[in-house]
Length: 351
Image (cartoon, rainbow, N blue to C red; front, side, top):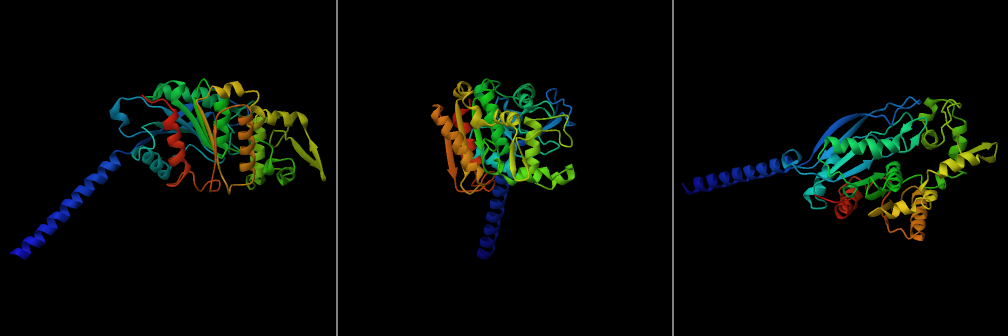
């Protein structure tokens, strides 16, 4: 009888533990955030370059959003080159963990699809591809404020992004401090003419030998150059890619197109910050980071930008970490969870 009771008691304890564990797991799942998808028919993105002005956005809504009735600050996250608005299960898990671990109070995060025919808008206004800056800073923000329970003021809006998105976050934040209060740029690209995008990069020579879109898609740096040129120096009279480049080659001789060079510099933050220093000073907080083992241009160009900001007396954070371009971004030991979300927790205005 004792043996039966012992076995029966152990079984009951095991079943009880399973029930408790199952209830806890179910509760943990139910307290996670949700992902909502919407479409925006953009007026700013009407264009002659065959880009689709109808854009999908993905919105992370915090746990209990539907039940709370509260309003939340918004992080506008800009994806990198070749990216889209997708919030993957892994990304959602990181966003959930940020709240559950107390890295950040409940918030909304939105990503808009800015993938183009040449795989990236560079978040810039273009007479060829559409006004992506206006779309992000005006239409997307207005859409979020009108359709979700946001805290509709600049103090509660942050802008962030990785790589091309880091470039876009810094530039749009700099141009629109009346819309966004804080900026976090993860490994921002194309800040200056250095290394892979400098005048002596083999990419310009390689691009001169590419004549079709199919050939271009098989490359990387030439494809980036075309996407940038369609944004910053479009030329509707120059097929097949309808853009001008700052550097070309005649044999081994470098040819500089000064007018195009100036157009590109007008869109590269290292050369822009002097003109927009007063706007940068209106931002509540700025942070940039980069991996020590990233491609050569990133530590150099971000260092150039940080030094220029320091020279202008513009407060900001600039941090190098041990990593490459993508291995410590959306991971459990990555920058989004441990640095980006706590940054916005400190500097955004919550209800």
